[in-house]
Length: 272
Image (cartoon, rainbow, N blue to C red; front, side, top):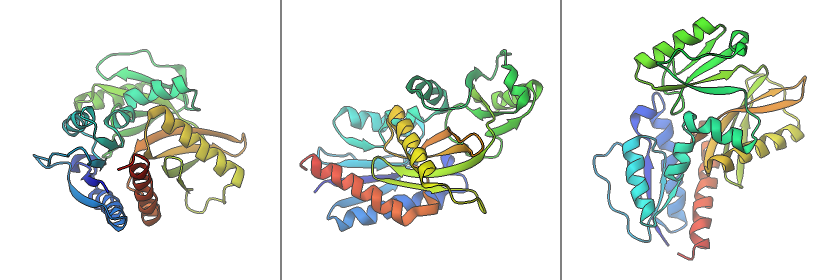
Protein backbone atom coordinates (compact mmCIF):
# COMPACT_ATOMS: atom_id res chain seq x y z
CA UNK A 1 0.00 0.00 0.00
CA UNK A 2 1.17 3.53 -0.75
CA UNK A 3 1.86 6.18 1.80
CA UNK A 4 -0.28 9.29 1.44
CA UNK A 5 0.29 12.93 2.22
CA UNK A 6 -2.85 14.97 2.86
CA UNK A 7 -2.25 18.73 2.69
CA UNK A 8 -4.79 21.19 4.05
CA UNK A 9 -5.78 24.41 2.32
CA UNK A 10 -3.88 27.55 3.28
CA UNK A 11 -5.80 29.65 5.80
CA UNK A 12 -5.91 32.69 3.53
CA UNK A 13 -8.03 30.67 1.08
CA UNK A 14 -10.35 29.31 3.80
CA UNK A 15 -11.81 32.38 5.51
CA UNK A 16 -14.54 31.21 7.85
CA UNK A 17 -14.07 27.65 6.58
CA UNK A 18 -10.73 26.59 8.04
CA UNK A 19 -12.32 23.90 10.22
CA UNK A 20 -14.74 22.73 7.51
CA UNK A 21 -11.99 22.44 4.90
CA UNK A 22 -9.69 20.60 7.28
CA UNK A 23 -12.52 18.32 8.42
CA UNK A 24 -13.17 16.78 5.02
CA UNK A 25 -9.46 16.25 4.37
CA UNK A 26 -9.01 14.60 7.79
CA UNK A 27 -12.08 12.43 7.13
CA UNK A 28 -10.53 11.22 3.87
CA UNK A 29 -7.33 10.37 5.77
CA UNK A 30 -9.28 8.30 8.32
CA UNK A 31 -10.92 6.27 5.57
CA UNK A 32 -7.67 5.72 3.68
CA UNK A 33 -6.14 4.31 6.86
CA UNK A 34 -9.00 1.80 7.00
CA UNK A 35 -7.78 0.54 3.62
CA UNK A 36 -4.39 -0.05 5.25
CA UNK A 37 -2.60 3.04 3.96
CA UNK A 38 -0.20 5.12 6.02
CA UNK A 39 -1.42 8.72 5.88
CA UNK A 40 0.26 11.90 7.12
CA UNK A 41 -1.71 15.16 7.17
CA UNK A 42 -0.03 18.55 7.38
CA UNK A 43 -0.78 22.18 6.71
CA UNK A 44 -0.42 23.89 3.38
CA UNK A 45 0.90 26.86 5.37
CA UNK A 46 3.78 24.87 6.88
CA UNK A 47 7.15 26.47 5.96
CA UNK A 48 8.59 23.04 5.14
CA UNK A 49 6.96 19.84 3.95
CA UNK A 50 8.29 16.29 4.22
CA UNK A 51 9.75 14.87 1.03
CA UNK A 52 7.67 12.18 -0.72
CA UNK A 53 9.29 9.01 -1.96
CA UNK A 54 8.43 7.08 -5.10
CA UNK A 55 5.46 5.34 -3.49
CA UNK A 56 3.85 8.44 -1.99
CA UNK A 57 0.56 9.78 -3.33
CA UNK A 58 -0.78 13.19 -2.38
CA UNK A 59 -4.27 14.61 -1.91
CA UNK A 60 -4.37 18.34 -1.40
CA UNK A 61 -6.62 21.37 -1.06
CA UNK A 62 -3.81 23.92 -1.57
CA UNK A 63 -4.36 26.87 -3.89
CA UNK A 64 -1.55 29.37 -3.38
CA UNK A 65 1.42 29.91 -5.73
CA UNK A 66 4.06 28.72 -3.26
CA UNK A 67 2.25 25.45 -2.56
CA UNK A 68 1.48 24.85 -6.21
CA UNK A 69 5.13 25.37 -7.12
CA UNK A 70 6.14 22.68 -4.61
CA UNK A 71 3.44 20.31 -5.83
CA UNK A 72 4.44 20.87 -9.46
CA UNK A 73 8.01 19.91 -8.58
CA UNK A 74 6.73 16.70 -7.01
CA UNK A 75 4.64 15.92 -10.09
CA UNK A 76 7.70 16.41 -12.28
CA UNK A 77 9.37 13.63 -10.27
CA UNK A 78 6.47 11.23 -10.76
CA UNK A 79 4.42 11.84 -7.60
CA UNK A 80 0.67 11.56 -8.16
CA UNK A 81 -1.17 14.62 -6.80
CA UNK A 82 -4.96 14.98 -6.60
CA UNK A 83 -6.10 17.49 -7.64
CA UNK A 84 -3.09 18.12 -9.84
CA UNK A 85 -1.45 21.55 -9.69
CA UNK A 86 -2.52 22.18 -13.28
CA UNK A 87 -6.13 21.32 -12.50
CA UNK A 88 -6.08 23.68 -9.52
CA UNK A 89 -4.70 26.45 -11.72
CA UNK A 90 -7.37 25.70 -14.33
CA UNK A 91 -9.99 26.51 -11.68
CA UNK A 92 -8.63 30.06 -11.41
CA UNK A 93 -11.19 32.18 -13.21
CA UNK A 94 -8.78 33.81 -15.63
CA UNK A 95 -8.16 30.31 -17.07
CA UNK A 96 -11.61 28.80 -16.48
CA UNK A 97 -13.50 31.15 -18.82
CA UNK A 98 -11.45 30.26 -21.91
CA UNK A 99 -11.26 26.53 -21.10
CA UNK A 100 -15.01 26.14 -20.60
CA UNK A 101 -15.78 28.17 -23.70
CA UNK A 102 -13.38 26.06 -25.75
CA UNK A 103 -15.04 22.88 -24.45
CA UNK A 104 -18.51 24.17 -25.33
CA UNK A 105 -19.75 24.00 -21.73
CA UNK A 106 -23.00 26.02 -21.25
CA UNK A 107 -21.72 29.09 -19.44
CA UNK A 108 -22.96 32.71 -19.20
CA UNK A 109 -21.34 35.34 -21.39
CA UNK A 110 -18.15 36.22 -19.54
CA UNK A 111 -15.16 38.40 -20.28
CA UNK A 112 -11.76 38.59 -18.63
CA UNK A 113 -10.58 42.16 -18.11
CA UNK A 114 -7.66 43.98 -16.56
CA UNK A 115 -8.78 45.87 -13.50
CA UNK A 116 -6.55 48.86 -14.26
CA UNK A 117 -7.80 49.39 -17.81
CA UNK A 118 -10.86 51.34 -18.89
CA UNK A 119 -12.13 48.46 -21.00
CA UNK A 120 -15.18 48.55 -23.22
CA UNK A 121 -17.90 46.60 -21.44
CA UNK A 122 -20.73 44.80 -23.27
CA UNK A 123 -24.28 46.17 -23.26
CA UNK A 124 -25.58 43.21 -21.26
CA UNK A 125 -23.81 44.55 -18.16
CA UNK A 126 -26.64 47.07 -17.72
CA UNK A 127 -29.14 44.22 -17.58
CA UNK A 128 -27.36 42.67 -14.63
CA UNK A 129 -23.91 41.16 -14.22
CA UNK A 130 -21.39 39.86 -11.72
CA UNK A 131 -17.84 41.11 -11.31
CA UNK A 132 -15.60 38.42 -9.80
CA UNK A 133 -11.95 38.36 -8.77
CA UNK A 134 -9.97 36.75 -11.56
CA UNK A 135 -8.10 34.08 -9.64
CA UNK A 136 -9.55 31.79 -6.94
CA UNK A 137 -13.06 31.33 -5.58
CA UNK A 138 -14.52 34.00 -3.30
CA UNK A 139 -12.65 34.17 0.00
CA UNK A 140 -14.22 37.28 1.52
CA UNK A 141 -17.01 39.81 1.07
CA UNK A 142 -16.47 41.84 -2.09
CA UNK A 143 -14.79 39.07 -4.09
CA UNK A 144 -18.01 38.67 -6.11
CA UNK A 145 -20.08 41.81 -6.75
CA UNK A 146 -23.53 42.14 -8.38
CA UNK A 147 -23.80 45.18 -10.66
CA UNK A 148 -26.57 46.62 -12.84
CA UNK A 149 -24.77 49.33 -14.77
CA UNK A 150 -21.50 49.98 -16.56
CA UNK A 151 -20.58 52.59 -13.95
CA UNK A 152 -21.13 50.10 -11.13
CA UNK A 153 -19.02 47.52 -12.97
CA UNK A 154 -16.20 50.02 -13.40
CA UNK A 155 -16.38 50.89 -9.70
CA UNK A 156 -16.10 47.19 -8.82
CA UNK A 157 -13.09 46.84 -11.11
CA UNK A 158 -11.39 49.83 -9.46
CA UNK A 159 -11.99 48.26 -6.06
CA UNK A 160 -10.42 45.00 -7.23
CA UNK A 161 -7.43 46.92 -8.60
CA UNK A 162 -7.00 48.70 -5.27
CA UNK A 163 -6.96 45.32 -3.53
CA UNK A 164 -4.17 44.10 -5.83
CA UNK A 165 -6.15 41.92 -8.25
CA UNK A 166 -4.84 42.38 -11.77
CA UNK A 167 -7.70 40.58 -13.51
CA UNK A 168 -11.43 40.19 -13.00
CA UNK A 169 -14.22 38.37 -14.77
CA UNK A 170 -17.39 40.18 -15.75
CA UNK A 171 -20.19 37.63 -16.12
CA UNK A 172 -23.73 38.14 -17.35
CA UNK A 173 -26.42 37.48 -14.74
CA UNK A 174 -28.57 34.47 -15.53
CA UNK A 175 -32.03 34.26 -13.93
CA UNK A 176 -33.09 31.00 -12.33
CA UNK A 177 -32.52 28.76 -9.33
CA UNK A 178 -28.92 28.42 -8.14
CA UNK A 179 -27.97 24.80 -7.49
CA UNK A 180 -24.80 23.86 -5.64
CA UNK A 181 -23.23 20.50 -6.32
CA UNK A 182 -20.35 18.39 -5.04
CA UNK A 183 -18.70 15.57 -6.95
CA UNK A 184 -15.89 13.07 -7.34
CA UNK A 185 -14.82 12.13 -10.85
CA UNK A 186 -17.04 9.38 -12.21
CA UNK A 187 -18.26 8.13 -8.83
CA UNK A 188 -20.12 10.66 -6.68
CA UNK A 189 -22.55 13.52 -7.13
CA UNK A 190 -24.59 15.48 -4.58
CA UNK A 191 -26.88 18.41 -5.43
CA UNK A 192 -28.00 21.04 -2.92
CA UNK A 193 -31.00 23.14 -4.07
CA UNK A 194 -31.95 26.32 -2.19
CA UNK A 195 -34.06 25.96 0.97
CA UNK A 196 -37.78 25.41 0.27
CA UNK A 197 -37.14 24.85 -3.44
CA UNK A 198 -39.23 22.08 -5.04
CA UNK A 199 -37.44 18.78 -5.72
CA UNK A 200 -35.62 18.68 -9.03
CA UNK A 201 -36.84 16.18 -11.63
CA UNK A 202 -34.58 13.15 -11.96
CA UNK A 203 -33.86 14.07 -15.58
CA UNK A 204 -32.64 17.53 -14.54
CA UNK A 205 -30.37 16.03 -11.89
CA UNK A 206 -28.89 13.72 -14.51
CA UNK A 207 -28.25 16.69 -16.81
CA UNK A 208 -26.69 18.63 -13.94
CA UNK A 209 -24.35 15.77 -13.14
CA UNK A 210 -23.35 15.41 -16.80
CA UNK A 211 -22.74 19.15 -17.04
CA UNK A 212 -20.51 19.10 -13.95
CA UNK A 213 -18.54 16.14 -15.30
CA UNK A 214 -18.11 17.82 -18.66
CA UNK A 215 -16.79 20.98 -17.03
CA UNK A 216 -14.51 18.97 -14.72
CA UNK A 217 -13.02 17.16 -17.70
CA UNK A 218 -12.37 20.49 -19.41
CA UNK A 219 -10.51 21.72 -16.33
CA UNK A 220 -8.87 18.32 -15.62
CA UNK A 221 -10.12 18.36 -12.03
CA UNK A 222 -11.03 15.14 -10.17
CA UNK A 223 -12.45 16.32 -6.84
CA UNK A 224 -14.69 19.31 -7.36
CA UNK A 225 -17.88 21.25 -6.78
CA UNK A 226 -19.68 24.11 -8.38
CA UNK A 227 -22.77 26.18 -9.01
CA UNK A 228 -25.34 25.94 -11.78
CA UNK A 229 -28.43 27.96 -12.62
CA UNK A 230 -31.61 26.17 -13.65
CA UNK A 231 -34.38 28.11 -15.38
CA UNK A 232 -37.45 25.86 -15.14
CA UNK A 233 -39.51 28.00 -17.52
CA UNK A 234 -37.00 27.58 -20.31
CA UNK A 235 -35.73 24.22 -19.06
CA UNK A 236 -32.24 25.72 -19.34
CA UNK A 237 -29.25 24.67 -17.28
CA UNK A 238 -25.90 26.43 -17.21
CA UNK A 239 -22.73 26.38 -15.14
CA UNK A 240 -21.65 29.58 -13.37
CA UNK A 241 -18.69 28.32 -11.28
CA UNK A 242 -16.52 25.24 -10.80
CA UNK A 243 -14.13 24.90 -7.87
CA UNK A 244 -11.38 22.44 -6.98
CA UNK A 245 -12.00 20.47 -3.78
CA UNK A 246 -14.75 22.33 -1.85
CA UNK A 247 -15.46 21.68 1.84
CA UNK A 248 -18.31 19.23 1.09
CA UNK A 249 -20.02 20.56 4.24
CA UNK A 250 -23.46 19.44 3.01
CA UNK A 251 -22.36 15.84 2.45
CA UNK A 252 -18.99 15.48 4.22
CA UNK A 253 -19.21 11.87 5.47
CA UNK A 254 -20.43 10.44 2.19
CA UNK A 255 -18.04 12.54 0.14
CA UNK A 256 -15.03 11.56 2.28
CA UNK A 257 -15.90 7.88 1.83
CA UNK A 258 -16.14 8.34 -1.94
CA UNK A 259 -12.95 10.38 -2.21
CA UNK A 260 -10.97 7.80 -0.22
CA UNK A 261 -12.40 4.97 -2.34
CA UNK A 262 -11.49 6.88 -5.50
CA UNK A 263 -7.90 7.45 -4.35
CA UNK A 264 -7.56 3.83 -3.18
CA UNK A 265 -8.90 2.48 -6.49
CA UNK A 266 -6.33 4.53 -8.37
CA UNK A 267 -3.65 3.14 -6.08
CA UNK A 268 -4.76 -0.45 -6.74
CA UNK A 269 -5.02 0.15 -10.48
CA UNK A 270 -1.44 1.43 -10.56
CA UNK A 271 -0.27 -1.81 -8.98
CA UNK A 272 1.17 -0.19 -5.87
